[in-house]
Amino acid sequence: MHRSPATESSSETRNARGEWRPPYPIRYAPVFAWPVKIGAILKWLFKFPGFLWPLNLLLLLISAASWQFTQPDIARCVHFEAGWIAQIYARNLVMMWLFYGGYHLYLYTLRREGTNRKYDPNWPAKKSRLFLFGDQVYDNIFWTSGVALLVWTGYEVVTVWLYANHRIPWLAWSQHPGWFVAWFFVIPFWREFHFYWVHRLIHWKPLYKHVHYLHHKNLNPNPWSGMAMHPVETIIYLSVVLIHWVVPSHPFHFLFDLQHAALGPASGHHGFEGPIANGKWPTGSYFHYLHHRYFECNYGESTIPLDKWFGTFRDGLPDGEGAKLAGEHKD
Ligand SMILES: [Zn+2]
Ligand SMILES: [Zn+2]
Image 1 (cartoon, rainbow, N blue to C red):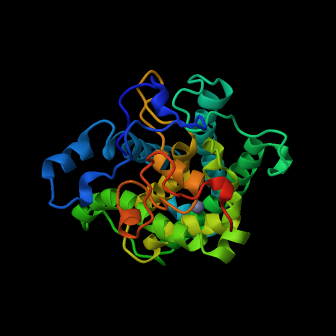
Image 2: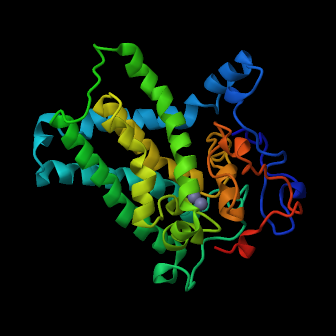
Image 3: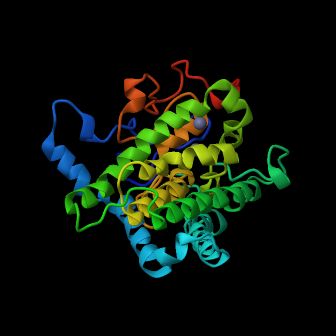
């Protein structure tokens, strides 16, 4: 997403409800623009912040480090055994708390940015009957770190077992180095494509009512809202990795895909627009915030213009165009 270059400075960046918004409407990445603008695409690929850096490369580095230092040897994974399964669970638990907990600590516990460039000026709900334990953050931690973590680990354990037993196709670097590298570029696009369609699916009334409503309790999201989902939704959301059961890939591609999906929502939900940390860390998703705010728009993200093509795009321009406000949402 194209982000505002300046820190919050004028009252124009907040609407009547006090919500922060970028000074210009959100726009899509230039990849699918016509006519093709090679210069703009290259700039988007390599600039900071851009496609590669920081988010995708950071997640790739995290996956590489976890593969190198914490992945159980594939030969051990031929049989389901407590040892390697516990190792994967513990690794994922630590990663989740570093990533989600890190954003929470910085932005919500220490409040290092105050409410500067915070989309919703309010802090997470306390003493609210809407949430488990009467507390939005505790509720979110329960669903994210308690439940979603189990689904994440479940996908990983089963898929690693399938790789170890050669029940799914395996792509080696020596076989097809070109394909091997291409996977890393394909995965973020595949994730966004898959997310758009499964997200449309769970907005289908019966699924919304029994499953997706839980995530949408978070009108004002925080990092831990990222994976605060009904377990059925987590299973659907993380089914993005089932592609590796069919299309030849290396277990490392699978790991990157899964960790991208499991860790990405922290930065997509923390409720602030980068840059934060004195302008050094561009992060946040106003695009997805608008989905939490208005529900029936922006089901995908801002790289592939699926919302635009299917008429569900909302660019964040001031209210008043008859858009349905979250408070008026009926499921
Ligand atoms: Zn969300
Ligand atoms: Zn939704």
